[in-house]
Image (cartoon, rainbow, N blue to C red):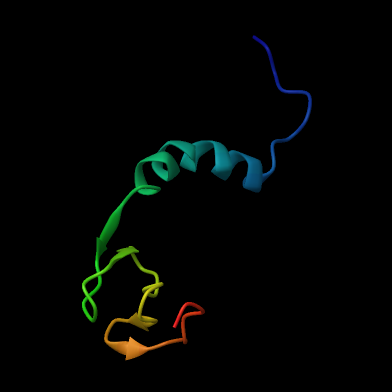
Length: 62
């Protein structure tokens, strides 16, 4: 049987294993609790700057 010539690093191994889930999660959005705009999950809202009901940052467009 064939054997690998070099050890595959944990980083490369994990990137290969997680590749399919990244493609699924890339388009998932939800409504912001504060302003109702669309935002990525587990991220602050780009329109109002709130995350989980707390003010996080001032958006550039405001």
